[in-house]
Length: 333
Image 1 (tube, helix red, strand yellow):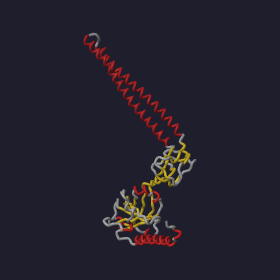
Image 2 (tube, one colour):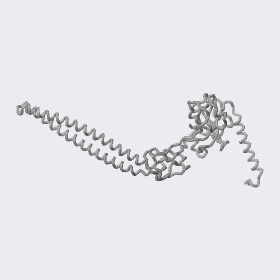
Image 3 (cartoon, rainbow, N blue to C red):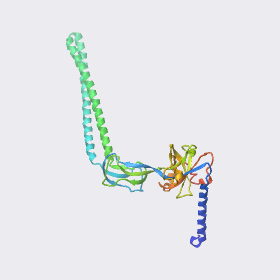
Image 4 (cartoon, rainbow, N blue to C red):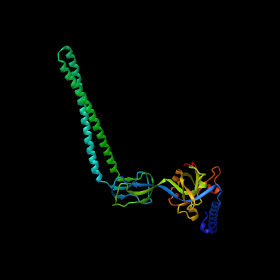
């Protein structure tokens, strides 16, 4: 086994090799083919706000900035005890509405029995009139009773429909209050990293008050700007390459997921005044989800880098933009 401390020239040689390799890559990037364009940017990720749907006092935040969380993890706890009274009131109203619906159902059953009796009486009176046992006026009275019973049944059914609708509305209010009360436990909508804590325990948060901001690490991209001469040759889905300043010898595949429909002047953060004066279009170079799952630590938000794109897709990528990363097996957008 070779011990490096006994071979200083080996260390020097390895250092020179690395410097030479880096210099080779840099020199290649400084002399791009005419069908390759590049632009500077920084790694970004889609942000997600964890916010309240009800006002309340923040009791505790269960995460720290930089923590990784899974979908459904508890982020914060609110004091929403005042909603308990509203929930109990809604439950009382729901029980009362349900009882009214049951009474209306019983009214239908009674009206049906009354109608059935009236139908029999009217039929019997018809036979008796024919036999001369009762007068026509007596038979007419049974017909009136029959019509009254029919109307009573119709009214009972309407009362039942109305009470049933009221009971459904009351139960929906119970579910809404339960849902609001469950908001006392704010949970992560998706897996990600905690970027910011936006409130502290003891604060009274309004409706929609934000507690924390999470980063969706499955939606990572780099926003860059290209002039109209380049944008006219690009389309959504075209391949791209990303090289981060922190690991310049790694070339990561990407694809164009967005092209702005409107031109704008390059933002101030672009280093040179000449570049800022150009009219450009914003695009997103999206990093494939499969690559993100294997290299989460490599893509930290804010890391600067360069996006390379081809204006002629029929031409191959230059050698210095090809790597194991760029040839990721099973490249998926």
